[in-house]
Length: 219
Image 1 (cartoon, rainbow, N blue to C red):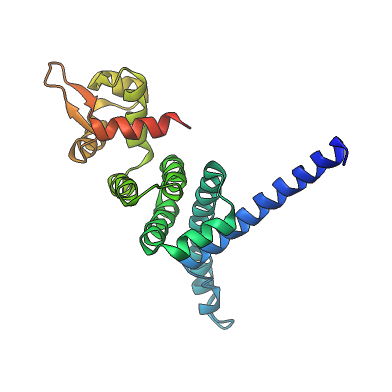
Image 2 (tube, helix red, strand yellow):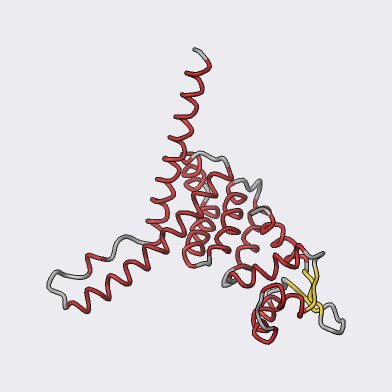
């Protein structure tokens, strides 16, 4: 077999692998988030009801698309074939439960949060033992409900020697300091950051925040 033929075969195999992975991601997301809801609206439904249903259907499809994107990226990052993914989920209930939760979170999260979830999914598939999976479950619990603004704060602190004043954060994000109080408070309550105890106020990453910043730095 000449080199050109071998390269062609490898290229076709890679494309097929990606296609199979994408199809598997779509199927898993579809099963987790539920099937189409259009059938619930009959042909004789009033126009306003039909339009309302279409709004909901489009929202559901957007959620599915977000989750599929995150899952497909996780498969690429983990380098695990789709067939092996399904086999692992079928053989391990704890892994399957956690993976289902990650898919649901990906559907409801901001794109920036989805990026972190993609890395967590990939690491979940490569979890070596129960304690490794427990660590990833804790990380998943911590990022539930976080939005893009929270991650931007963590990313900035991670790139700024792990700490910054409230004014520096506000200036970097181009958001008035007073409007950032809620986001900063949420990160503090979650154990992501803490007040360094100085005046003016300086916020610094805690241990979990450092781990989250490391995930964000990969993107």
